[in-house]
Length: 94
Length: 263
View 1 (cartoon, rainbow over the protein chains, first blue to last red):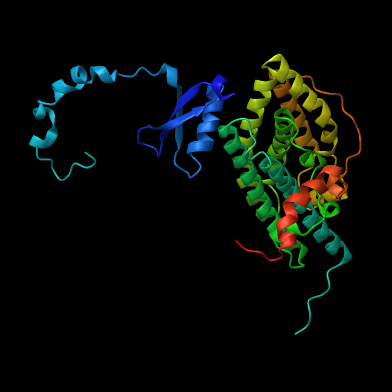
View 2: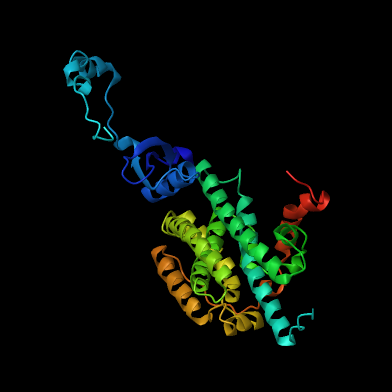
């Protein structure tokens, strides 16, 4: 039966204000069932306040073979990092 | 010091009815929770296994709160464990529907859905109870029940409006289990005593709301509501189908074989 049910990726927001994070996946026949399965599998210990599910086939991933072309060019641009600036004490949560 | 005056006969009867009323709610939750837990390791999917177990745990949690309270109302020193594990079937007062066997998945879903719809109305009404402790238990249970209903009504529609095979099975389950619904809102002396005391609401309004919800969801699931069958089921009064005794045999085996056993 598992073969018939598509895979959904599960994202949980642990508390208000934070972003949803990917936590894993569930099999389900439809999106409503996927929310229920995600709730039952991934929020048993009060891990979240919000759930997203998305069909795994709807996610387009970058090709590991293209990793050099995609990510290497950023390596030598260290000036993009904020490490050259001093951060005032009054600024929180950066 | 003078002893407290002996309670009047009417007061004794009221207390007994109060205990009995709480015990009925407890037993329905406990028996349904035990039935659901029989699916553990056997559900059609890993995720459904966990889902059904979560439902079972919620129901057994409700039963624990209610059984403890019933034990206090009874005043004979029986705690939740004594009430759950050391009573025989005729002492159980759950709704007859709750004890029906799991059958196929469609049977389990129909039984769950009918009782979820019932608990939704009963718990919602009890949040206004004159008994503040019962109102608090009902408020907690109502949140859980809303999820249970989401789960069971989702499956009802999915199966009813699914394949020819799933439709046939869920309609068959409905046809078989419907006769037990006559008991859900049939008041007896205990219910009437609790209504008079402001502890329970009259059953007419919850019954109408239950019926309307059931009709709407059956329509969404493309299922036919069976004809009402006024067969007198009396699980609430301790008269059960043969299934309860078998279920209790398994549920109570350990505490009876090893009295006082602890983890």
